[in-house]
Amino acid sequence: MFTGIIQEVGEVIKRDSHRLTVHASRVMDGLKLGDSIAVNGACLTVVARGQGDFSVDLSPETLRRTCLGALASGDGVNLEPPLGIGDRLGGHIVQGHVDATGRITSKRPEGDCLVLRVQSPKRLMRYIVEKGFIAVDGISLTVVKKGASSFTLSVIPYTLANTDLREKSVGHRVNLEVDMVAKYVESLLAR
Image (tube, rainbow, N blue to C red; front, side, top):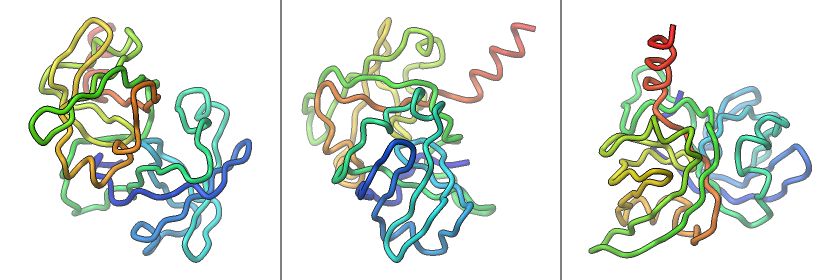
């Protein structure tokens, strides 16, 4: 389980067909084989570890469901180790189970913030509510406005400076994870 509070932006060293190797520093402390780590919001398992890098395997399902398959050497990725017992829950509960990808359709400044519009698959829109949360590339963000097939986010300067959103432009795909509680409530009510 994660919080959506990014600890570090790592750099992709290499991505072959089903393995991703990432250079990192802050998240390396205590990281060992078999540990979970969120990479752009996807919960992955550490399968190799070097002095300043780690590798994770990408299953066919992960490649279908996320935009991790589009990563190339030099790309930045949001990294977050899992929440430990007794840790502060600073964002929201994030499983690291990406629901789908969305696409950034606009970026505009508003004050010192950046307003992003993200197009989402329509099937996810029922779980997205204004002033609710969503994980975008693993970042816990608050929905400002909801449309029929898109939503907006107001990203503060700190988040821009400390995540890979600073590198994303209009047209970039992003991983989306909606509210887990909303999905469970819907499933229970459907019975």
